[in-house]
Amino acid sequence: MSDLTPPIKSTNFIRNQINSDIDSGLHSSVITRFPPEPNGYLHIGHAKSICLNFGIVKDYDGWCNLRFDDTNPAKEDIEYVNSIKKDIQWLGFDWNGEVKFSSSYFDIFYKCAEELISKGLAYVCFLSADETREYRGTLKQPGQNSPDRDTSIEQNKTLFKKMKEGDFKEGECVLRAKIDMSSSFMCMRDPTLYRIRFETHHQTNDDWCIYPMYDFAHCIGDAIEGVTHSLCTLEFQDNRRIYDWLLEHLDQFNKSDRPHQFEFSRLNLEYATTSKRKLKFLVDENHVSGWNDPRMPTISGLRRRGYTAASIRDFSERVGVSKVNSLTDVSILESSIRDDLNKTAPRTMAVINPIKLVIENYPEGKIESLNVPIHPQNEEMGTRMIFFSHEIYIDKEDFIEVVPNNKYKRLAINKEVRLRNAYVVKATHFDSDKDGNIKTVYCTYDPDTLGKNPSDGRKVKGVIHYVESSKAISAEFRIYDRLFLESNPAKFDDLSSSINPNSLEIKNGFIEPNLSNAKIEKAYQFEREGYFCRDSESEGLVFNKTVGLRDTWNQ
RNA sequence: UGGGAUGUCGCCAAGUGGUAAGGCAACGGGUUUUGAUCCCGUCAUUCGCAGGUUCGAUCCCUGCCAUCCCAGCCA
Image 1 (tube, protein in one colour):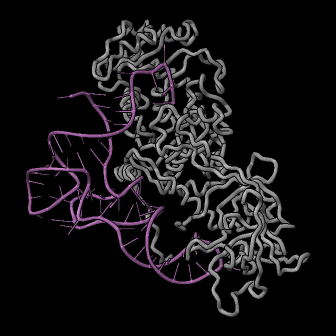
Image 2 (cartoon, chains in turn red, purple; image 1 turned 90 degrees about the vertical axis):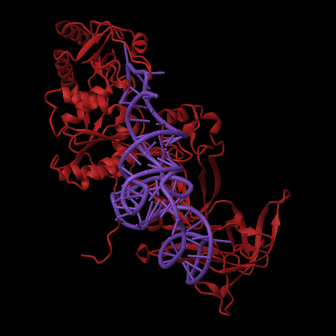
Image 3 (cartoon, chains in turn cyan, yellow; image 1 turned 45 degrees about the vertical axis):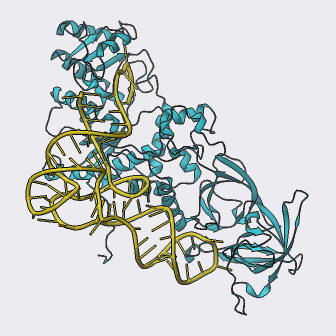
């Protein structure tokens, strides 16, 4: 019993639908399914669907199945089923029972097809693919019946059996539902139910040479599993008619509590793409290093970049579920990961663009150990050891010769600044190389400012970070930017021109010695820089920048 | 007049005949050895547009406008 106001959980049209279905007694619990086709890696858009499907059942004492929609062996691969399972588990969800496959229902699908044939509701059609297209008509003109539409039921049974036996060539014929060639729904103009494919399937090997189409398999798969609410994206709205038609014409599934399909809008993220085709293009054309490149909006890419499962779940909650076509601002995602990492990431200092800072009045050869907090707001995280000496590294961005304005808080000649966790220093002069690049800055320090403000009461506003030079460890930093120049690359069929050529910047600098054994993908906050994690695919000390700190400094 | 959908703050998004939640962003202010975090405050007389019904409309009706989806033997 807390007297805190419970957080307001935003509702959505799917929750409303479920509530009403439970109130009316239609269903007593909720069963959903996440049905990926194993033909690519999961991305942030899938994550939204996973969080929806797996998340919603927790509130209703129901469950969610993982069912691979593997009805097209030509495009699918076992590699993808493994990566998909891994990504779902990493996101923190458990599916109900064993992993399901549409392909394990092939026998049932076949019997359903026979039932439709027996009812005069399906027929074997020998039109070629091109002819089928011509017969289908257009959006504004009705189609024409196939010449095979009136083949007798008995003959169709025989023909379909022959299809299954492999007596026909690939493409020679298909099984079609007999619905309405003049329907305003294109998907109801005698849709194809089965096609012939002499392909080896990753689950059923060579058991079958006929494979069901999505529209035929999906609704039946849902019905077999007792799915109550079949959630999919908006582009399937028309397909709902074939979904309902099939279940209503199959005796064993035509029940009041049969599954129903509900469509929500897919996630579009600014400056990214959630098109499997386009993601594959980026991989195939070597614009990125692979599906898990940290710039990719794939789950594996986000993970390698340093995004946590909790932050992705939080993001899904924040963007909500609706039927509006939208383009989500990346700042919502960034805010989710910052909120998580701010609480959990140990603080450390890293210098990304190093220049030397020599403290002239600090004894040469002396090295001081300083015990400093790992997290400023969480003492329980403990302390770590850092060092201080005559010579340290600071970031090039933190020194300027002349203070540009009175808001400027970093180091400059004759200006004092706090070295984070250490002393107050004042710059005196600097050396540049022949190109004018600043190489070394010289300063003096105030010995009486360790862990306290100057005793004379003078205020030191700025704080900059540093790494002691003799103990510093070299590291590589990978700084990422958006992959596309366009906020909505979905608008463009040809992505090449909108690819950001500077989406990866590699820097070499220094980290604190205690980071030399940093664990892969564990988040650290490099103070004043952002959140970083050690790259999982690199040998040495390579850190990926997950996201910067919020920056409210406007110049 | 092919059909199916959707239009609420810069971006997401609740609401629904009774007088516009929340988050992100932005902007003020406070705290601060991270220009971070944290805290406090500001931010839609208005819900695509135009009519109508009603005491009262974002919500109901009519008509427009805009955007997205559908003519795979892909999913």
